[in-house]
Image 1 (cartoon, rainbow, N blue to C red):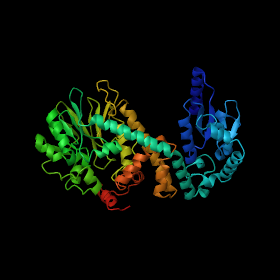
Image 2 (cartoon, rainbow, N blue to C red):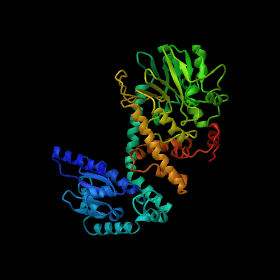
Image 3 (spheres, helix red, strand yellow):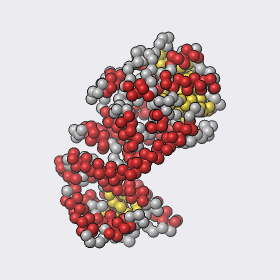
Image 4 (cartoon, rainbow, N blue to C red):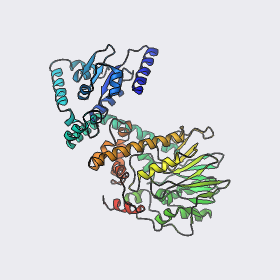
Length: 508
């Protein structure tokens, strides 16, 4: 209630300052995929804030207009004009269409015979079959008549609603995909063969490249890096990035006293022994990472071709304890399973700096690999929230900080409080956990649960859709939104390459 009133107050203040007409209030079903898709278009057209879009709830209706009834609003779109008129169904659509130059003709024609009669007929059909047509395995059924909706809502209705919502939004999906591709290319060009020397040289981020590995940052935005912090080299890349790493080392000549891997994924461990032999520094890994690397599991051919199959870890190597000494202090070693079972992070309590590896990969991450356990990841992120973090360094190139001694670098340095970024990821994962648990409780197929985790009303769902599906296609399904659902229901108690191998071999 307070949020709805606050939003209306903000629009009113804006209207008063800019002397624009009061807004039209649009009441829609926030769980219906078709409604969400249409509202996305409405927001794209409404450059002058002529409308306020409000998902249906009892609080929203009472704050908007006392004449509105929730049963009526669940059946049809309702619009309350600045003058207090209420339009419903097809008449609401034409009312909104007349507000914008690009749709004004549709609004005018929609009020003429025979278009008005046809539009109203369609809306009456939808109203009469509201619950059976609704996506409502999590739609308006959360607001009214949940049991009736669950009985009547068929999966065919779910998919028809979800698919239609996708096609309504398809131009926006494609445009977002093009924009993301341009941004990825720009960031890749700025970081190509580059390094960042930060904190008076204590922190060095080396951006790694390779002919085939370069396809990953260009297609998916995942940069490859190696980090040297206070004499400790962390995650030195894969064999196919070795030439790039050697070039950096010749130019920067950093002092390396130890070589550490945060986890056993191929882009992090492929050069451990090579860098150890080159620098004379010992290799230090967690006990579980050492188990995974001796021998290293055979990768799917796509990953082996693009990133490179790492060699087995060769002795001598050291097992990490609770801390690791650096040139001027020490780093705490914290177990953070989730992204994979063996993941660790390194934390400098003096500098308040977290070398997170892949324990944090942005607040939104939708296409994990098969060894992700999201329930463990949630617990790990909750532990990280207890740390005092001012600088968060991701394993794939992004640095989250508000510190002024970290200079700006567009596309790499993200000006935000690291704790807020972690909190946002926690919120997202908790929401996913609820969605997936409810889906399995209702005995829904995995693909239906997957779709319910990516409603078109969420901006991230459609903005990342093209990239996510490209990842699914090029990895032959190895990285996908489907794996995100599976990551919340892992039951295998064995350390991961077992689950890994099942996925690779095509098991379920």
